[in-house]
Length: 283
Image (cartoon, rainbow, N blue to C red; front, side):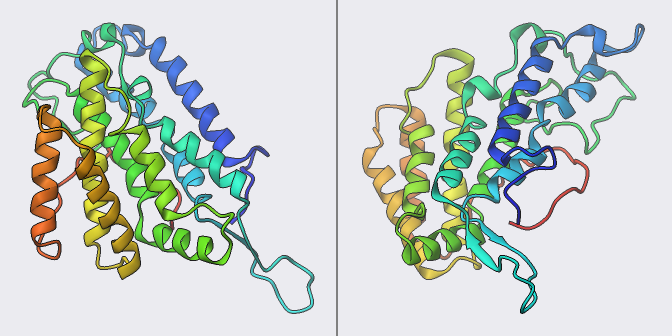
């Protein structure tokens, strides 16, 4: 593991740069992104790599959280052997990661949404297009869910959760698993709900967050203490939810099902991001 990207920047700085490039590209996105005479539906094929432009920098940034700086050192070569990533670097990485879950980041411009019709006969949906729940039409909420899912899968990976638990126990200056989940919930369920389209994105991300917590709490690769922490945070969320809002009431019902039999509970199937180049590995 190394702190710096190839361009000499910290991973979270690279992620922030990637999000800025992505935002500018989406702002300028339009019919000029396809050739004259091509179906407008082909805009979706160009949109996907732009919308998920940050995916690899996201992975690099996530590795900083609960991260270990190490070398394959040899005895006597004087190299660093292992060192936990500094707390401030982890904090900055988490802040950058949480930006990728915000409705402002995930929302697409209305004029762009109006440009993408259903795909014509003969133009099929391949694995490099965003998955949809809308039968024929482009689905901006499912696309947002897929993008949020990339962040959540990386942040709440069982191995990362275990390292957060261990490193904080060894050095209380390191971020704890509890603190990371608290910040995640503050960004999602505990944040003010916007109106309209961005509000629906926020609800989508909220449910994806809860589902990711369920997955971690039921993962066979998670330790008992990791599961204990996640279970406690889910219970705290349950106590904070109102029965007067549909998405809160549904979340309470799902948590009740989970609490009745955690070992038999099956989290909902999440929407995966479209296929990308096989770059990067490990958590």
